[in-house]
Image 1 (tube, rainbow, N blue to C red):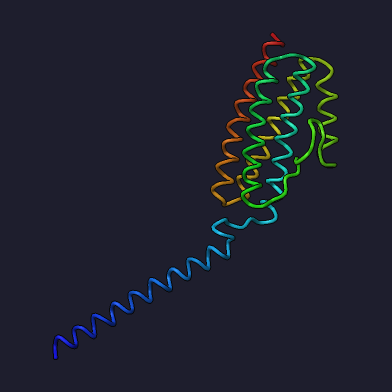
Image 2: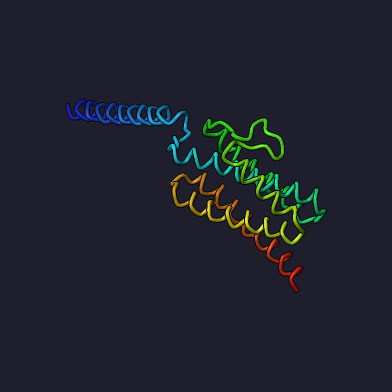
Length: 187
């Protein structure tokens, strides 16, 4: 009798354990499906910020390409390559979250309506002298730093924070380089 009671109790425990595992797996699957196969959803603000950052990195790259064409300073060529990597990092986020790329199909110097006047103004300013071109670089990097700090403050997504943090470090390095070139021209 005692053995039979032990077997029944053990069977009930095993049954309860199995039901618990199945319930946990179903809940996990439901959560994954709700999030789109493991990808967290973004707020409208996070989506808008990613789109903005993609355009801002494109402005930096395109302006530096143009400044290199105008002035031949290697700094612009080197940093434009870095800005392309920044653009690619943001593009990877856009693709991951299914957000349309605002830079798709756009040539160097071609932007959405909101960014075109800024690009045109920066090119006009940097066209005046090499010193002004370095000031344009300084301006872009300071703008980028401010926007990245704000973007990081407005998200709780680890992947966005990581990418924005890497871009921020790059912008600080670029700013240091522009500041050094500005200082060398004023001494």
